Image (tube, rainbow, N blue to C red; front, side, top):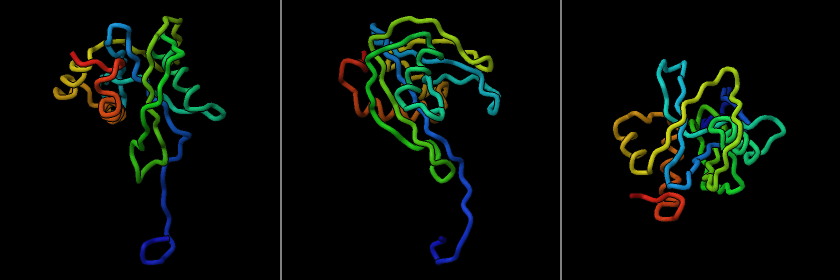
Length: 159
């Protein structure tokens, strides 16, 4: 129903949601993945993230994506927030998790994915954002929420 009472059509993209993970190494550095983004024809430095598949939960997706994209697993996953990455276009909700106490495991990315891993201290991530090296919207939103919710706590130390 439109504001004037008339019937109308509304087209949007439906998803089951997404889980984004901010993996924190024991030294306080944060693991990110770099991959080529075809639609923008450039490399993108991002936090591991993936869509929730039918029958899976957000937490299961977070654990799967962490393992697949970084080669780490954890039993220490904390939900720090959620957001809609493109309201008005999609009903997707992305949940953000901080993962600590990481353990190395075998990584098996999809055949369409190729990741290069990088680790940064929080202040370095801020610098990469300022320089527009980190430009992915989901990463930017997640980083903002994580910093405001957890800044000053052990899992996001600033040097």
